[in-house]
Length: 396
View 1 (tube, helix red, strand yellow):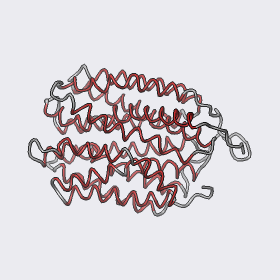
View 2: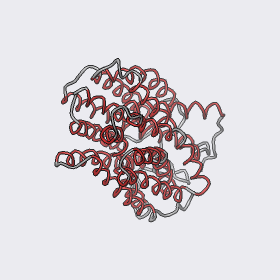
View 3: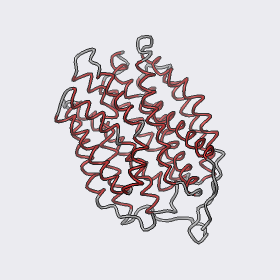
View 4: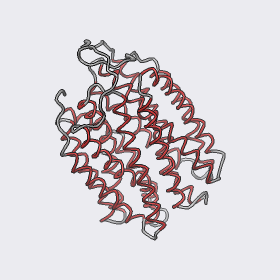
């Protein structure tokens, strides 16, 4: 087994910053900015709430397909090629969104943008994790998700700040403009990382293939599926629910997303630290419990209190679910690398796609958005149960 390679604090900072910016661009300016945008786009008559849910589903379908592409092309040399390619796809599709109010074009564009998001969201953290493992710094891996937390706050500001001056498709311009410099700098830094192009086991032999699913990983996959379906409902529809439940001009109509963003910023550091102190698996179980309480609060406490609790508890946990699950998965199968990460994100992506689709069916059948949040409650309860069946890794 190779000895750890040396690394300077400046190198660590640059790599984690680059990864954070890449995730900020594709995952918040690409995906989650749609959540605060949705009430404005509905109010602009670009589409209805039901059509907006369908657009979200197309984006999540693309995310799933992107993650599946990352399973197929998981080698380091492939990652170095695909990262800049799909960052360019993200930028181009975001620019297209600034030019159209046509629902079909919007849906197709958001689907392609989701593909780019899925590829980059898998490959960038996986590449960084492999780089950190070679330098005995794997416990820092969760910090790359700080970009998502900061990005949520940035995305909220990019939507609400110029809201009075923009209309319809124009509302995408701030995200498009910011994506170009941040995304491109981050990708260029990650392509320079010194990581072996071949995966090796502890004896130094090249690994060509190992099973993704076994008795150790299946409970983790099932728990992660529940997390994906559970968190995506508030992360897609919470501001819209606030607009429905609260009177016009209420501070929580934009404030729920601000709360989510503020709580998300420290969340990667908090859950990274909790995983180090109490162990990743106990931390994951606690994470599920808190997140479940958040979505349940929105259902059983309609109005401002429930919305605030949902924003705080989901915002402070969902990134912790991601970073803890990724780290547990790699510890259970240390030699899977980016391939295992891609498989977990693909499953996560599938359940995220199912969430808005189920919501659309529910709304079209006459159900309420509030009652649709019950789907998230059931999903997180499912995930929590399977989190107790995840075995402790043999090699931490």
